[in-house]
Length: 157
Image (cartoon, rainbow, N blue to C red; front, side, top):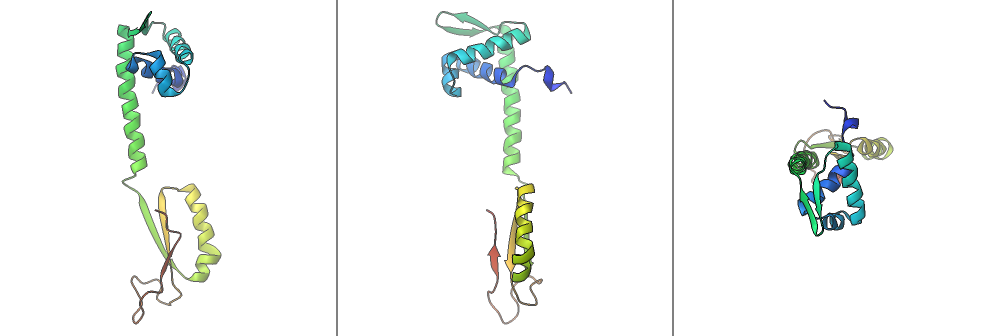
């Protein structure tokens, strides 16, 4: 794997991609909420880092060089791959849901503080508590002869 420190500045690459896609430093600047001069400086630094021109600067706009067009395609593929990976992580099809059935005392005095700490470490895992003081609390469903009596506490959506 290449050394990430050998790469050009990620900011410069993002600025270049926006300018090349829009074929305008001004439009790229508006998209990124910076000045056109900031885009120009980032692109110039990238060109110096790579040792080649990426744009032909004209009086009324810019045009990609052959190397600039090559870099644009490579960056768009790379950014798409990164975007897909981030989306997959956000969607979490492998998300974990945990339900814990416990008594009121155990929940209040021990479990709830532990769950709070657990969520800080594992924000993607949903933990629900079912609180019941019935002796059969460890069994699924309702105890015979009773309906209700269970409460979901601290469930995260």
